[in-house]
Length: 508
Image (cartoon, rainbow, N blue to C red; front, top):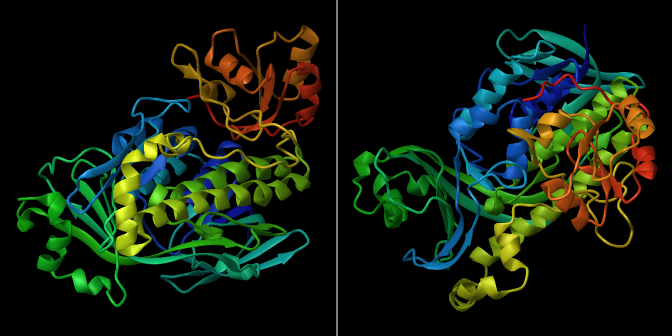
C-alpha cells in the first residue's frame, strides 16, 4: 500500500495547479489520472489577470506569456458584425501585474503545467490510472485504483483527497454530493479552426447578438480560432460536420478565405450549465473545479474558478499537515469559494441572457439599448474591470459587518522595487502590508510568526490601496487574499496564525 499525504484525482488544469501549489509548500502529493497524456482538443480558451497571477505563482510567468495573447475586451455585434457596443480591456499589466484578459489553447497550457509539476520532486503524476473507490476512516482515505493498461489493482492511503476529476468524475458521488441546478441549460456548437491566413479581426471577444443564431468568436492563438453557436432545438453537431454547411456559419468572419485554407480541428456539441455542488467536502475529501461547479462560458470563468479553488485550498491543507494551522481552517474553503463561484455563475448567466434571450423582441431591445450601455452607472466598470468579488466573511476573512474595506479582496501585485512585485517578495507566505513603520519589537514578532513585512510608502500603489480601504495596514494570506485590515498594526498582529505555514516556493 502506498502512503502519501495528499492524493489529487484528475490531472486537468485544476488538479495540476493544486498539486504544484502543494509541492511548493513542501507537501508530497500524488496525482492520478485515467489518461496517459494531455487531452489533445481545445476546451477553455480565456482567463483573467487574477488567474494569470496564479499561473505566475506556479512559476509559469514566461511560459504562459509565450503561449497566450492578451485580448482587447468584448464587442457586441449584430449578424452583419456591426459593432453595437465595445467594452475594452487593458492589454498592459494592471493591478495584478498582467493583462486583464488572455486567450490561449488549453492543450498547450496543460502541457506546460505538466512539465512544471515534473520540476518538483515531491509531486508524482501517474497516468493510465482510474480511481474506482474512495473509503474514509478516522485517519485518512483509502484510494482504490486500477491500471487501465495492465488491469492491476492497488490501494493508496492519503491524509486528504482533492477531487479534481470533472463534472462526471467519481469523487462527487463518493461523498454523496449532488448538483444544485441554477436554471441555465443551453446547447452550443463549438468549432475550433486553424487558419494560416490572417482573418483581420479585432483582437478581442466578439459576442454575436443574433436572435436566429447567437454566437461567439475569438482568435485564441496565432493561427487558432474559436466559434461557438447556440444550437436550435433538434440540431446536433452532426448537422454541421458537412464542410459546406459549417462554412456558412463562419463565413461572416472568414470572408473570401477558401474553405480549403481552414483546417477544422473540432466540431462538437456542449451543453452549457449553471450548477453548484450542494456540498464541497466530506471530512478529508474535497471537490474542486468542475466537480464542484459548472459555469456558462460567457465571461471566461469556468477553468479559472477551478484554479481559484486550488489556490484557496492548497495552503490551508499545507498548514494543517505541518500543524501550523488548526484543522478547522479547512471549513473556510467552501464558505469562501462557494459564494464566490455562485456570484460568477450569476454574472455569466446575466451575460448569456443578454446575448440570447427574448427572440426577435430581444434583438430589437439589444439594437436600441446596447449602444447606450456605457451610460449605465457601474455597468462599464463591470464589463471592463476584471476584478472579481471579495470573499465572504470566514475565520480567515475578518471583514467588517458594515462597510467594505479591503478584507476578502486580493492585495494588488504592485511593483515594489525594480522588477520585483508583491508576489515575488511575499513568495507564498503571510505578509503584512503597512504604511506605518513597525517598531523593532513588532517587526520581530511578525518575523517570528513567519510573516514578511512589506512597506507601503506614501505615493506607492500599495499606500493608495490601503488608503482606499481606510486602512494603514493589512494582513495578506499566502493566496493573496486579505485576511484583515485596519488602522492599528498592533491589533492586526493577532490576526496572524502563531506559526504560519511554511512555503518551499522560490521567488520569481
